[in-house]
Image (cartoon, rainbow, N blue to C red):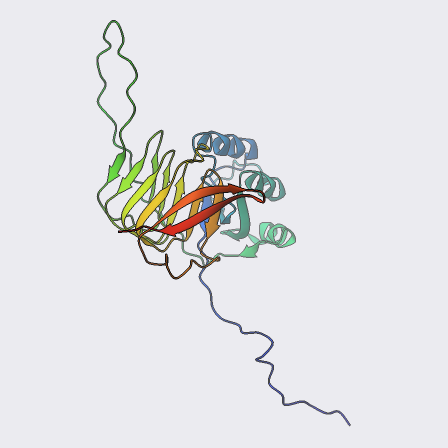
Length: 254
């Protein structure tokens, strides 16, 4: 006679809902070489812009263009991974493409809602007349952002520091070749020393980041912060040691 155990299995695991921040690639062409070239050009100035970001491939825009050649999904996935993106799902695919996606481990995300990013433009200085002899080069001052950054917004301070006078909300991203100063809560992503400046630092009045990175070394919210820096004034710097580089997060003393 079979014996059915009534012992609960809750001690083995819990199943809970989870929110995972994803980026979406809204594909406009099936020409994979063009996509690869465009990504290479975009990442030339900010090589750490994509740092193992989970991705949804949105092919909705391709269905209306019958002139496009069939999409080589396997080649596209390979190119995306080479540029620091991790494809997890596909959106807007027809039955044949869905079958190919399943073979590559991509899930059907046709019901996913894609937020359209609202970029924050870097201020452009008016052109200056060229004098003879030309003046010595002048270092750029810090870029200053005085409004809160919402989810989907991205700011890049090229060749300079970045100062944010408000909150950086979850899903927002701030990048600088120099230091990043946030006079509010850091709840999104902050990438300092984007071109390899190992001396760059990140300062925040309230340290609650999704991700912090300096010169390519990063730490995510999956690794919880210590109580003495979580939601407190703190700084992030890069520390080198026998075991390699790591991020050191310490409180800011009053």
